[in-house]
Image (tube, rainbow, N blue to C red; front, side, top):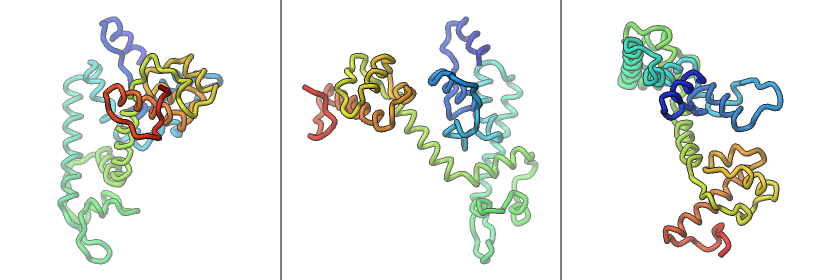
Length: 240
């Protein structure tokens, strides 16, 4: 990461930053920059709130496109990656189309059958014709995508929501003393750090989720008033 950004800096380009949802090194760097280090830092999986998305079987899908864009991956390697992703996509689509008789003798989509506890790819392949020539790595990726599909979709929605909130801008001249519900200590930390968006607010030590929500409401009220939008009475309004 340091080498990549050193070159980008020399070229006058924007820095390369990996999000917490994209890689463990993104979690590590964000932790060190946001919270500092008072004791030896150890990167446990529990530090990553989106660890279900940070699996070994999808590491290439998460990171290889970046490597290709940055010139670290050859055209040939990237093409092999695209072909692998296409095979995985075709295999999952085939599972959605095919039917398997379950324990009760009722036909169910093969993809639903694979989701059952204790069922693996080999058991499915014994019952229906599957896409041939898949590697063990590709099969593992298919099993993970199918079995955790519901959880992954839920996590993707959460990532989108959090990213949208994190990028919500905070006016540079905001008076944090006027935000209802903040303690004196929280106000002092906010005034010292002067966060530019809600993502930076969340990373300030001592700022609770309730405080984050109050700041968001206060800024949203200001934004709507500036746009001439009526704000319902009782909302977290700034002093006139």
